[in-house]
Length: 370
Image: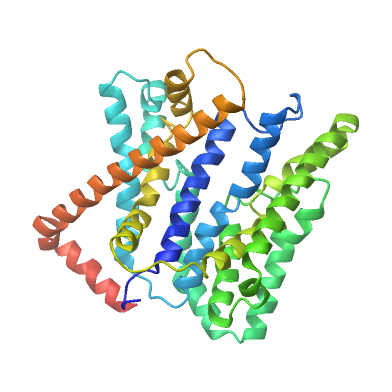
């Protein structure tokens, strides 16, 4: 690998993780997942199986950041760029929708809706973007801790965090007040530090059995979820634990992500046009998320596409698969194209305008401080 170039196999994993995110959102919006108040048919079982194998996507995305981030330098300029990318979608999407006559949050909520566009991090406009951005701001502290603690000290610290945020909740039949199911910064810190440990000291068992760990973890989560569905039909007390296997801080969701990461560590892709294309798409994947999970779009895109793909409202395996493939392809392609245009616009703005501004030079000076 050339110096400074991202590893192609992990960029492909980043792409796969974003495809998994789209699949999870499709399953949720299309009501294709097992539910306690709905009959368990073949499509819902298939939906639950797909969900189990895709659920590792978020942990995988964070794991990639921690694994490589612990050996990298923090760049304030990168944080500014990430924030600008989030703002681009938070502000542009509603403007386009208003021009198209589609109702938006700002039209419905006025100033309260506008605040969610202007302050997307503070309002958790995108929950993942908020946690991921805050994680990057904390990364120099986390990296310094990981690098300066001894291997034993770091292992003990991570072990304690994982017991608190993952281990206990994974076996608890009741929900804890502080548990946000992995949808928050605290869990991202646990995953980041775990990845940093592996980045510094190796993956041991996971390096050898990555694919087996991934497949086994996902199947275990699926079977537990399915078993809890049947138990919940007779005893309501199992209703909460029915959802636990689909929490990001469930033990098998974490081990599945680690297994998938190390499975891809053995994937080899030759340098060339394909490798360059994968690297480029990997760098644009975050835009796919920011587009289809915008607060004005997230609850509407499935209805828009289903109205085109399945206007009669039919139900069946064939229709399910057609909708799934079409939604993944269309959303991913649209997100990549739009974010490519955004990247070109940002690059032009930096070269022609921003590079001359004093604030740009200040940010460059801050980058040098790390």
